[in-house]
Length: 320
Image (cartoon, rainbow, N blue to C red; front, side, top):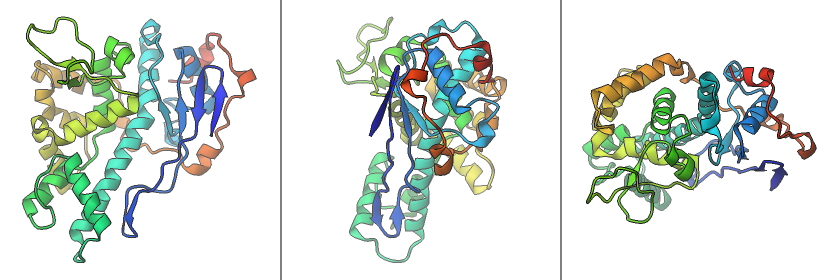
């Protein structure tokens, strides 16, 4: 079911529970999600204002929407503070959704590892797919080292870290690759012809900037990259140590494991940590999506009420 609005389509996407058995699931209750395709940042501001979604109302929960792509005019926002807040608010729901999905995987994995009963066929299939997704070889049920490796990899990433890297790599959603490829983390592909050739690529190099169908796909790929690639083992070990100590997963702390993300190494890590601190992103750690009742109360703007005009100053101020 979809409802057309002047500048974007809104469809309600129901997340289905993928059941391996009565003991294994990968989701909570089904949740309606609003899908946005804005054509300008003015219309995105107007939508957020209508929902009462701002930096000051985050304690009321985050609306469960997905953004197809950033508006083409993100680079035209002159107010730096407005641009930053609009960028962070746009990505925040999708980051929370993906982290929740990973934590559901983690909970299911821990339950299977702790069970003394033989796995059902569907449970075994689920575990095999999980090992493949996180690039783990071996049987976690019989090899404690494989089980530890999998638990080290199947875990969330701090919201602050994700948002800071996205902002850094995409110039707050206005870079060429963010606009043309929905690539907000600078990920590469080595399959010729499938991505965008970056300007200044060294002669003989074959890498391209990977294209994504939407922003959520870019976030999923980035998280899987940090959770599975050997280059970020240090980050995962730091996170695992924090888990063992029952300590919070802090973005600034885990950023220390990003030395291999950029050729700038320490300078890059320091920059990400500075962005987390300067933009006060650590305060987003405990945020949750609005529950079903709250989502049901979000009324969509009828088409005749939508406006293509520039949002008022008061509407823009609602973001802060």
